[in-house]
Image (cartoon, rainbow over all chains, first blue to last red):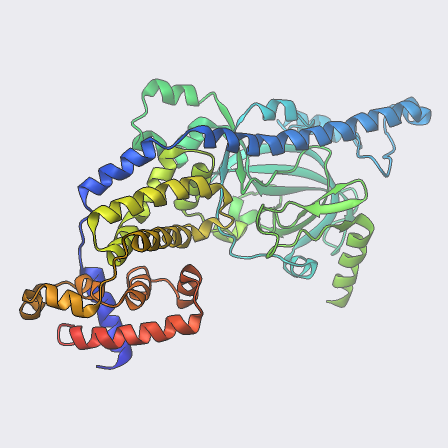
Length: 309
Length: 178
């Protein structure tokens, strides 16, 4: 019998074989797991919230330095409508009061409320990326819209058993002539705030664990934060470089274009001071570079790549 | 949604993340999803049920402790199989149990006359240890040769040659049945 034929038949035979798992071993497994220590959870909770705490501390430090700078910069304090952005410090900037007010009226969050979010439960899911964008060239090549922008407001919505964050971003610079400075575009990212009830329904948890009606009702009012691969979604006043694709059809929008960040979070670079950097999932450093660089270099590189296309 | 995010969304990865966060229910689900594979491999190496139980216990404990350090969630199955194999070899070392084809064949002469009743697994089980483990991982777990090489810490060339020898032996024993 030829090699390949034999191999295929062997696989078929193996698949057709039924082997019973010994019930006694099942009980042993349950017993061993029941005796596993709980302390691991505490370590992991610290590992998870420790990062959040450090990030928050960093954010607070930057804010405190910012406030101090304002106090020293008498000129800035005198202006009512606009604060100049110090190059070294990212501060809250109100660029267009009426736009912000409109967004607020539409239900957008226009102020960074990390204190509120910090107390929320986090549901983090992970999945394999089918595409890794390892270089700026790859991001530029696949993008429909590339901008440097400032996030004016965010809102959350659920679509197709997932939670999304919709960000209104004001264009500071457009790189591929698809938008102009001052335009306000809508970008979508995976993750956001939803109710515990939605999480339960999307994952059929109520059926699996025979949840009571009371528990389900309670879940309708509990807010949870969902993240994909722990990647943070955009926040109001954040400055960003965004590489995105037009996914208006997917979301079924008829009133405005929806641009989805490439690779979930891979096409979003947060600008902090003079540096632009994207989120990196822990442990992926060897296959997924952060592409951290100065804002000036990022700007230059994007122009170069587009120029060479 | 896959196209928009560039993501696949298997539920098992959700369980892995939960297990990393200390969720024992999620961890138990992961073990249950892989228990048959682990059982066949452990039985293949150890043959003794009591030893298999011990190997399972050690594997579960080590996996629970070590899952926080698992960098790539999609390799969970490979990772836990590697732990199981290592535990099995530790037990073998302690017990110094080594079975060869000749021993198995002479133990039960009925098998010679009742080949029709013996399942493929039993025949695979009768192979030499180094051939048996690659056979189990390749045919039963459908793992690629490259991954088998990583699990067993041997070069891919060695995996290929062992598979070749295993197939030749299995062909002799099974060809008329397939």
